[in-house]
Amino acid sequence: MEKQIGFGSLCVHDPKEQIHTQPHQLPIYATSSFSFDSIEQGMDVFLGKQPGHIYSRFGNPTIDTVAEKISRLESFGTGFEASGLLTSSGMAAIATLLMGLLKPGDAILTQGNLYGGTTALFRDVLQPLNIHFQTADLNQFDELEALLKKNARIRLLYYETPANPTLDCYDMAALAELAHKYNCIVVADNTFATPYLQRPLEFGADFVVHSTTKYLNGHGNSTAGAIVGKDKEQMREAVLPKLKLLGANCNSWDAWLLNNGLKTLEIRMERHCRNARQLAQWLEQHPRVEKVNYPGLPNHPSHEIAQRQMKDFGGMLSFELKGGLEAGKQFMNRLQFCTLTPTLGDVDTLVLHPASMSHISVPREVRLQYGITDGLVRISTGIEPIEDIIGDVEGAI
Ligand SMILES: *Cc1c(COP(=O)(O)O)cnc(C)c1O
Image (tube, rainbow, N blue to C red; front, side, top):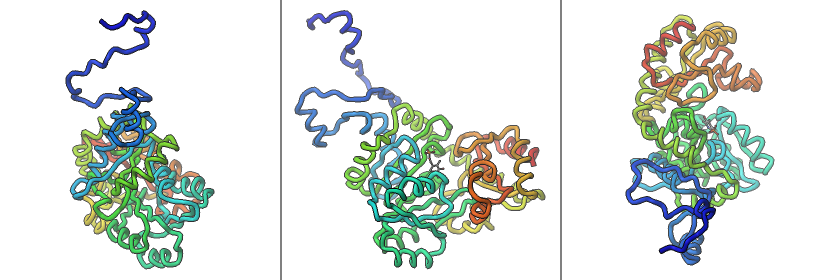
């Protein structure tokens, strides 16, 4: 018989866990720490001599299972095993990775049309730490090579393809080849495409980052990010320690929601792509539409590159209405079915007017340089029946 303990102690202490069969679905581990059977076991886990968890800021079974799933998706078909970490957001993934890889004096080479938060992170967080960045057109290889030759401080090439909101695509294999020639690390933000459409590691990237808040979760109900690296040792020695110290870890609940979304990634992406293609074709022939940006259209400047490196052309598109800013605003206000929101990648169709929303603080001439005209509308095509999406867009145009 066990020794009798007091009523209050029975309230506080849990009986031994009643797990006799494996749960069918991933459990949410709501525990900040893990306990050890002996001091020896504790030492071995701390030293990494045996697997085990210590403290949820360093990871726990829920978080690590989902990180492992994303690393398997990003390395699918590549023949090597990658390693993954989950973070509290896409921004946390980017910040943690770059702080793990770069030191003061280093510089980043990247594109001007990055996700706005990423540009702001480079400018307002990394630059004050003496990690500088330089932007260039990632389709101009002569210019890129000249920059790499001239500036030996550039240690890292950072890219997004397709890029927001004109869906310009960049040749991932050629970028990696050029960067590696100058001993630069290659990092890809694969948020827009997801590993269903393209796997940058296969095209030479060393690391992939994600805002899983978008397509990977797909339902707009969790904020998280992911880092996937080809080199397991570098992930363990350079990236994980920074994640622990910055406290950039994901939590179990958001990881669980992300995992739930991931289960349907393939079928969601199939429908997102099919709907976006049909919507782009419909918009292209509309007399009130000036221009449609969708890499799946043969006249898009990146059509050929996209065809070479993507399985399909994705769910994102943008288009320009005749009539500029006023036409763009009126269109947005007349929509009944599509939702006006600044995120993307959810199951429902989401619409954004960059000139009055995401890029409102960017000077007009700067945004025009990146194709963000006054009447430009961005659509994240949902998985609803295409007739309902086109019907709403038609009514609003
Ligand atoms: C949203 C987004 C981010 C930032 O991710 P959060 O989860 O919002 O922190 C980074 N890159 C791209 C391409 C994004 O769309």
